[in-house]
Structures are given as structure tokens and as C-alpha cells.
Amino acid sequence: MGRNDRASFGSKLGVILASAGSAVGLGNIWRFPFETGNHGGAAFILVYIGCVLLMGIPIMIAEFVIGRRSRANTARAYQILAPGTHWRWVGRMGVLAGFLILSYYSVVAGWTLEFIGEAATNSFAGKTADGFIAAFNSFTGHPWRPALWLVVFLLATHFIVVRGIEKGIERASKIMMPMLLLLLLILAVCSVSLPGAGKGIEFLLRPDFSKVNGDVLLGAMGQAFYSLSLGMGCLCTYASYFRNDTNLPKTAFSVGCIDTAVAVLAGIIIFPAAFSVGIQPDAGPSLLFITLPNVFQQAFGGLPVVAVVLSVMFYVLLALAALTSTISLHEVVTAYLHEEFSMTRNRAAWLVTGGCIVLGIVCSLSLGIGKEYTLFGMTLFDLFDFVTAKIMLPAGGLFISLFAGWYLDKKILWEEISNRGTLKVSVYRILVFILKFVSPVAIAGIFINELGLLK
Ligand code: TRP
Image (cartoon, rainbow, N blue to C red):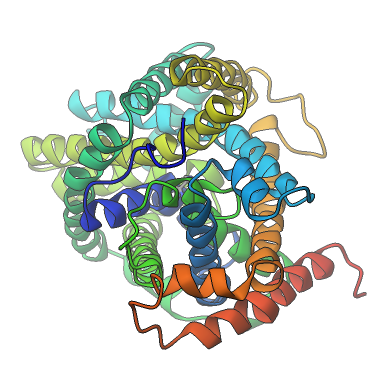
């Protein structure tokens, strides 16, 4: 395909919503609360917001620049902007990270489908906290149910990706994002007014900085990259479909704000509810799936119809939010295979879907019947999460920052950021400074600290 006849997004709102659709997903609503819970609450959230501002948004702008300038998949992008250099490995590592994330992410996305069914049949009614925990464990330990949902979810992703950019991705995002936000607001109000919710609010708002250590820093940094879909060329690939008049800094800022708002809102829903029913905030990946049914049950137990309608709506929207994220992950790998190995888009997409189904099923089984098999003390599921979120994405972010800050011609950087001089960008100098020094030093510092090299 020539460089000028690639598909593109149809409107400015479509650009923001599709990027926000990629960013907002299980990372915000499922992963953010459990990472916050594992790392002690309020202080983690503040460190997280710092990471979004100092690394997330600047690196997102850098990815946008690389993608729109090159108008190619993420591996080719570096070959176009830095021919004959090793920078293309940054793109390739990103494609691999995308494939790994998509595999285990689809497992959790599949869980949301099971929960739509549970919500619709009102099976949350009358359960206690222990009952929810037991039900969740028996579901994830089931030999084939989670695998079945995973396959359904990956096939849904597959067919949207095959339909292409404007029709599939853009249209889907435009409807779903605003609905999700509205429902989250309603749930936040419900959760905060549960009996005993105060402790959860305190957990979210009163920072204890004595708890901030290397793990907290690494966790917050990893979460920022994960939640903003950064460090692996995902938004870079989307930006290759942006229009020439898309305002890159403004889009990045909007996406960063929407994404952070959704994550914080998810925290406001989960923690008051968890404390209210006595579920530990560090319950890990199961946190969302055992606290939320409780919120529905406690807040609306007396009104079964309301409980069913709201909970079904919630899980449907959660599944859709996950879908706009899996689409973006899938698209990175599909665009790479399609453009680099001259296969049809259809065939490339099938390869990705097939590979992820196999790897996803293995991840899913590693939480159930394969629990005893661990590597570095982690199940395969946890290992994939750790390696991608806490190593590959920040490392990718580090290289992207260095690429845009040091390697890339400043003329190109300026042209893309200011749309060839037609935009006034007051933050340009600060941005270059952050990309050159602040984010690379911060990321490298957190890595070095975590490896224990400073001790
Ligand atoms: N950001 C998405 C979420 O929060 C997940 C995701 C999509 C992602 N694309 C990504 C994570 C690229 C890392 C990199 O759910």
C-alpha cells in the first residue's frame, strides 16, 4: 500500500475518541484499582499522576509525532525516520509487547462477558462477600468456560479490525465512551454512599508517603504506560491514521485527562465498596470482580430490576471499553504483519487472532488448573503482566523519549507538533526538555533503583 492511500480517521472527535478508546479499558477499571490496592492507596495515586504528567503525556506526543510523520506501522516508522539504524528494534519490541498484552488481556476481557451473563440472571442476589470470592475462583478455575469467553472476545476484536479504521474503530468509540463515563459516575455515587464507605475514601485521599518505595514507583510508572497505551507503538500506529490538521499536543492532553479521570473514578467506585463489605484492597486481579457485584447487591438489592439493568449495563460497557483497547493492540500487530510481510490484512489478522487464542488459553489455565506451574514465583498470567507493564512498556517509553528528544531532527519534531507552524504551541520548549532529560532520567532511575543497583 502506498503511503498516501492509507486509511485515516474521519473527524477530530473521532481521533480523540479512538485514542481515548484505546487508552480507557481494563487498565483503568480493573488494573488501576488493584495496583492502587497493592501499593497502599492515595500515595500511589499521586505518584501515578506525576508519571502521567512527566512521562505519559510527553511520550504520547512523541508517539504521535513518529506515527503521523512516517504514516507506517510502528516497526516501519523507525526505518523511515531513522533508516539503517537499530531504532527499528524499538518498534519490533513494541509489536511483541502488544501481542503478549493482547493474549492475557483477552482473558480478563472474557471474564467481563461471563459477568454480563451473571448480572442478567441476577445471580449476585443474596451472596455474601465470601460467596463472591468463591464464585469468582470457581469460575476462573473452570477448565473451559474462561477459555470459551476469551475466544469469543478475540473473534469480536478480529472482525472489527478487519472492517478497517473508520467504520469499525471510530464509530464504535463514539457511542461507547460517553455512555461508560455516565455509568461510572452513577456507580461512584452509589459506592460512596454505602455504609462504612468512609474508610475507603480515606484510603484514596490520605496519602502515606512513608509507603512510597521502589515497588510503588515502578508500579505507578508501569501503570501509567499501560493505562495510556504507551511504550509499544500503539498510539504511534493510530497516529499514522491521523489527519494532517490533528492537533497532537492537545489530543494527547485530552486523552491523558480522560484516561486519568476514568481510573480515579474506578478507584472511587471500588475502594469504598471494598471497605464497606470487608474485602481486602490488595486482593489483586480479582478485586474488581468481587467488589463490584457487591456494590450492585448492596445498593440495589431491594430493587432487583434496577440491580439487573444497571449491572448488565456496566459489564456490557466494560466489555466494550476492553474491546476498543483490544482493537488497538490487535491493530498494531496486524498492521505490522500486513505491511512488513506483504500478507493481506485478513490473513495478518487471522494470524494474530489465532496466536492470541493459543497463548491466551495457556494464560487462562495458569490461573486455574495450572496454578502450580510458576516461573520466577509467578503464574504465566502474572508473568506476562509483569514483563510487559513493568519492563517492556517503560523500556519502550525510554527509547521513544530518547528518539524524539535526541535523534529526531528538531525541524521534524517542530513541524509535527505545530502542524507545520500553523499552531501556536507554548509548551514546545518544556516538552523538548522533558523528552530529552526528565522522562529518560526518571524511567532509568526507577529501573536502576528497582534492580537494587543503588544500594
Ligand atoms: N490502555 C489499555 C487499557 O487501559 C490497554 C492497552 C491498549 C494497552 N493498548 C495498549 C496497554 C498498548 C499497553 C500498550 O486497558
